[in-house]
Length: 536
Image (spheres, rainbow, N blue to C red):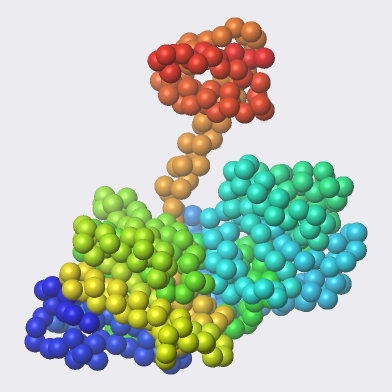
């Protein structure tokens, strides 16, 4: 690999590679940071700060309140190692839930838990959004196979057309479809909407929704009460000390994974082993703190560069989407812990190798240098042997060659990269990979002095959406009161006292007129914003 521009010339790239490659046999992983342009003495410079960072992480795992906005602990690490939980009660809750998931999945697979009209469940439909869908989707795509006992489907948005597509894919199989509704609060609007759409589909098919439904939610939530009163098939808990973006090792991810036939014990084992490794207060051998320090180096601690994830494995295609939430929701913060405005964050995007070479690597090599790349590779291509596509060359050899070629091409132009190598790809290694990034995000947040475990921007967006829907109700009510009378958006806004929201009024009217649900007709005019609307 050619030396990136500016890297110290005091050693060859091979010597640099040997010095900065770390091998972690506990989790079957190698981490190579030699392609990052950090200076000599970099780790020594950070040692004093890391003493505090390691202490903060230890306090987090011991049950310190890590989310002061809500007075909550942050305990996703306990999910895969329950005995480290701060109380025996929490340990018992975790262990009981995991045992319950195993038992329920076994009963579904055997047919003991079955559709009301007979047969076995052959599919599941997961309804959730954000962390309640991204983690399960990633696991399903990464670890699923053609012979799985249940085929997964997802409602992960409130898009009617998207839900229609999923229902069309399920088709007559709806009678054999188990629906999982996942919402911690039980009041998440997107999830509620998907649940209502699914329930309507079951009703149209002459099926009892409750007899096909399972809830994963907080105890006593609106959804929990609905499932209890409606006599759904099962209810599994979500706890307030597990955030959505770190919930994949809870019932949120483990239940659908177990139903699909994924080895959840291996998944948990990999995560637990990685936690143990990345708990070690040693920047030379702890891969998570090394990742976090590389992020700190690349971005200057202010998010000046994007994180590009390039996995050379089809099964990791969704990993960049999963990391978008984990990294960006955790680190994208306006203020630090002292209240100072910092506008912190790291943008994440990615594709998969070698597809990325035909998509955006051209810009990575020759365009604006505002990123650093993380290559992820797996040494074992597949189980068993591969046919040769050229003498002595397999498809997997090509894939490895493209990765190395892309690293070299980027390095020639001074573009920084690091590489994660998995010795094998299975549930254990995926669990370790998830845990590695969860810990790295936590370490980076401590280094940056921000709270990784709250999301005020998300809540602001939900509040704003609520205001739009409230405004829509007033607009439609006014149109019905003035039935037959056509009005412009400006006239309607003035009539309902919303002259400061004319653009929102106009956009609401456009959407209402484009759909038959609200009985709004539009007379298109020039200029377009002068178009008129009336109720029918």
